Image (cartoon, rainbow, N blue to C red):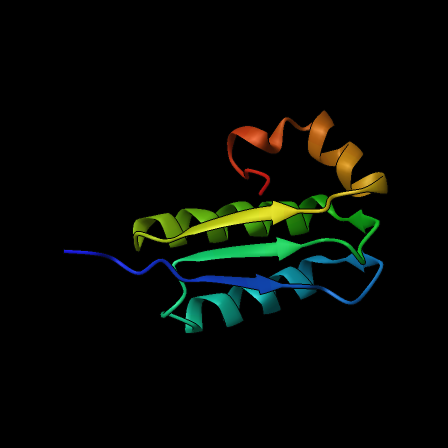
Length: 95
């Protein structure tokens, strides 16, 4: 038996990802049940709030409970610094 793995990318357009925007992303991702792995591509966002990171960690927990996963990619600027300082690699992996 083979299993098809589906991957979807979400690309925020703002330079700063806020908690409200992370909540919106969370709702969209949870509604898209056909996607196994979601990658949030942060190429446009130089900043992300700690509350937004917290929302993404909670989203990953919910996805993993459903047999799905969440990864981040292209972190840069203050977003990358905050990710490293808070050691989020253990709970929110990079793609």
